[in-house]
Image 1 (cartoon, helix red, strand yellow):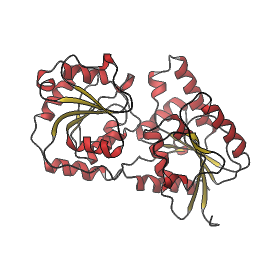
Image 2 (cartoon, one colour):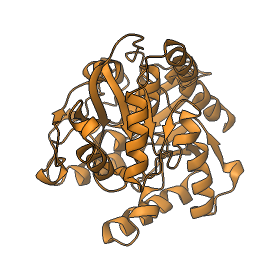
Image 3 (tube, rainbow, N blue to C red):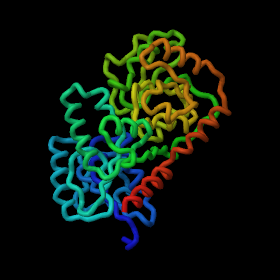
Image 4 (cartoon, rainbow, N blue to C red):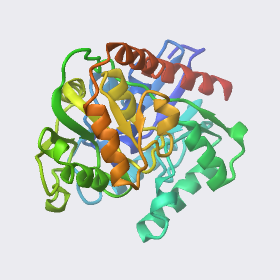
Length: 354
C-alpha cells in the first residue's frame, strides 16, 4: 500500500444478507474498481453472493473467504471471526456495509451507508421489524458519517433518527454498462422485476392486468426475480411467466419489453428505475419514496392504491407509438447515475473525514 493512500476496510454484511440485490451490488462496485489513492480490503466471510468475482477477491482478507450455502449459524460464525480479526486491524476508514453491530478496526472512522427506512414505515409493528430497527438505529448512532442513497433517504434519516444533516451526504447509486437502449420494436411483455411481497405492491399489478382484457389478451406478464410466484400471485386471467437469471438476461428483458412496471409504495433508491431508463424501456411507476426523485419526468406515474390508475397508465403506455427521441432523452438522463460517479463521490467523503 502506498504511504499516501487511504486504507478502507469493508465488512461482509452486504454479501451475506442477500445472494443478489441492490445493497451487495453497491458494495461490490465500490470495492472492485479502486483508484490509486484508495487501498481496499474486504472481509468476505462465509457467503454465496453472485457479485463476488475475481475483481472482488483480489481485495479479500485472508482471514475468511469461503463460498458457502445458507445455513444455520452462518451469521454467528461470520460475526465471531470478524470481531476477533478486526481487533488486530487498523485502517483509515471502516465502511460498514449493513446494520449488524460489529467491532470496528482500530483507529478507523466509521462510515455507514443508509439505504431506506422500509422497516420503520412498514414493519414497525412486527417483532422482526422492531429488532431490525433497533439494530439499525444502533449502527447509525455509532457511525461517524452516513452516506444516503437519495435525498428521500437522507430526509427519512433526519426525521426518524434525529441525525444532523452535516453528518450525512447523498451519493446516488449507478447502473451497469450492460444495460443498453433499444430504439426499435418491442414484444408484448409487461415486465416486473424483484421481490413482490408487501410494500412492493405486486398485487396491484396482478389485479390491474388480470381484470383488463386489452392487457391480458394481448400481453404476458413476466416476473423477473429470485423466487417463483406462489399460487395466490397468479392473475385471474392472462399469462404470468417467471424468469430468473443474471444481468445479461435481465437487460434483454428490459430491451424487449413493452413496459416496465414498478408499483412499489416506497423505495430508498430503486435500481430497476435507472436500469429501465438506461435500456429505453417505458417506465410506469407509483413514484413512491425516492422514485420521482430518481426517474424525474421520464416515467408515467399512477396512484399506488388505485387499480384504475395503474390500468389507465398501462393502457396509455402500451398503445403509444415508439418514440425514439423520448427514449434517447431518457437514456441520456440516466447517464448521470453511474458507478464511476458513485465511487468518486464516496472516495471524496473518505478523504474529507481524515
